Length: 284
Image (cartoon, rainbow, N blue to C red; front, side, top):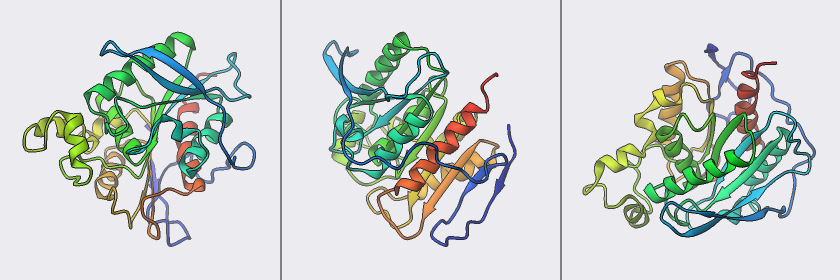
């Protein structure tokens, strides 16, 4: 594993940035940031609960099936739906799609259980089925799971539950500790099968902070806003720090001047970090 270094950034708003030794300045490949909605195909699949569900799939115009390819799972926020990844409204998802196009990656966005699931058991099972279907359609070298807010939290959850099924993680403004997190508790209790006091081990199981060793083989980028009160940054920060201490490949970007959002450039930096780490592992 590449040794990590700590690098101080000139802009005071960037509190912390851990970089792999080979990762210094990151050019952002591709054209100018996109604006507006992009086309995505409506795909139905057989969910494990016996129902027909759907997700959206975007294959960039530049995608070449004859070259090494990646799959990016883009998970939406609380109360939104899978179309959020392609509607062009949020900088986090514009960056997701631009990074995917620059790295020959297909983007898939599911509802993962419900629009407020926080990656409970049903959402987890839905995503497992989608991954199986996607792997039957194309030969992907890498799978990157990503998302913002609830999606950022759920990315950390799924990566900890199934580290063998993902290769990289980009979590934007998510929590890594459901035992500690206090917001949206009614929705989370419905998804997790009970409250913290009723099923505490389910909340611990879905909290990436308790399993930093499961991120060791998967490059991980985490973006946070210090002023975030919707999903406070503390647990995800601690997870990033622990992954770094035990030798993992991790990038932490924390902005002191913002709350519950990740600007486009920081989101692109997060994806570039993960993609570069994964692509360096490819055998020529």
